[in-house]
Each structure stands twice: as C-alpha cells, then as structure tokens.
Image (tube, rainbow, N blue to C red; front, side, top):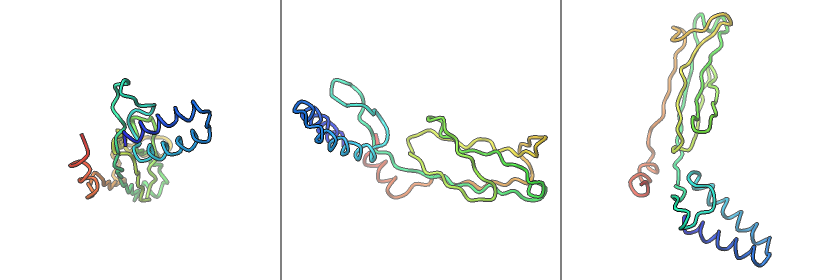
Length: 153
C-alpha cells in the first residue's frame, strides 16, 4: 500500500505538470480508496525524505453493551448517563438504557467506557442497585489474529 501511495503522488505531480486536472481527480479518488483501507497514520503526502511511517492497515473492532434498568430506576424513569468514548478524537457516544448497542471502531484508536451514572433529576447515583451492565468485546477474529501474526509491527 505504501508503494501505491508513492506511485499516486508521482502520478499527481505528472498530471499537475501537464495541467491534466481530470487525471489529478482520478488519482486523488484512487488515493481516497487506498486511505479508506489504511485509515490511520500519516495523512499527508509520504516521501522518503519525510521520514515518517507509512499509514498502517487497521483491523476493525467492536464493543457491545446492554445497560438494563429495573425496579425503582425503571419505575421512576431515571436517566442513564453512560458513554463509549473515542478518547483520541474527543467524541463520545451515549449508551441507551434497555437497548443493545454496538460500537465499531478502528482498533488502533484509543477508546474507553466511561463510568455509568443514574440520575433522578435531583441526585446522581453511582453503582445503583437497579442498573446492570453487560459489556463484551476484545475478542479476536481469525482475520485479526492473521493480521497480528503476519502484518503488525
């Protein structure tokens, strides 16, 4: 993939020099496709003198959650405050109560699940007896194991 990116950069320079802007657009679309596969690493032009690592292929990962409210929490319509945070991008996704939720993400990105809280509008509860959370993830598919054994640095 790194060689393909370098070829694309050379082709873009050739197209720009000959004022072939439709050629630049075609090659740019090709690079977008390659970057779609690669997903992380140095996002700008890569040359030998840049002394940067080439982007790496990122295997997708997923985490699943089921945050269940019962008893008093359910009767009083207490609000769940629970989030899956993509800490490197500063984005958090709210986890809904009584609903199975999956988050699929680039496994090279740092992520975490925030401490879940319940509120009744007046008080905030930590570790409420009527909140149960089932979370799963971190499993490795055959594709992920192959990637780590054969490609990962």
